[in-house]
Length: 95
Image (cartoon, rainbow, N blue to C red; front, side, top):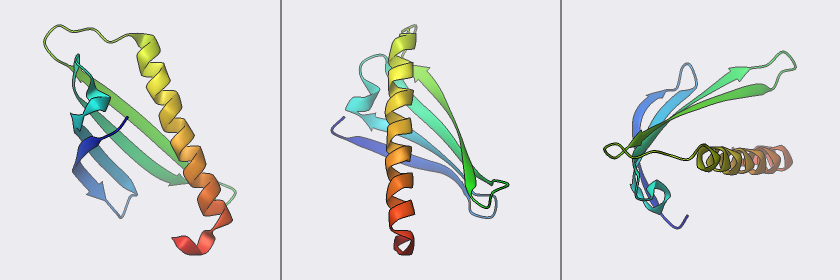
């Protein structure tokens, strides 16, 4: 995707939760009005963290979204998180 515009709906720094919505861009395509994400970061037993992500797709009118398309988007998002995780593991002083 080349561009997107997001809106931060909620930022809970104390509980490490962010909710944001993609409201514009080619990521939405023709059938999708917006996509809302909630990301929670929880401590793990080994001293690291666990990220829990959920998303909600809102379609335009009666449009349908292909399940394969949603899974493809989920896989792309997971790839971004893995790349970020690898970067921060290799560069702990950058954050």
